[in-house]
Image (cartoon, rainbow, N blue to C red; front, side, top):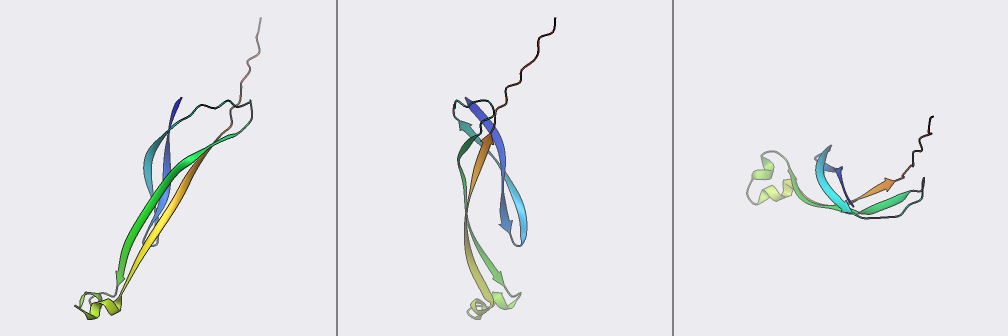
Length: 95
């Protein structure tokens, strides 16, 4: 059975957390007892960012500008786990 769901992985830009939204679809079928929990996993988000921080003006000077720059590379990996606990609702019969 196909179960679409929305997710949001936080990503870092500068010092702020900016959520990115995406859509993933999970196709699975499981047999679970009433009240038991099943975990659906394996939805990964990989990010690879390069950034340059520099001193204004000095970082733009040819050749010497590299002394006033900091280059960095960040690799992130996030996994989304979906916990499902089915509950069977029983309706009492009325006469």
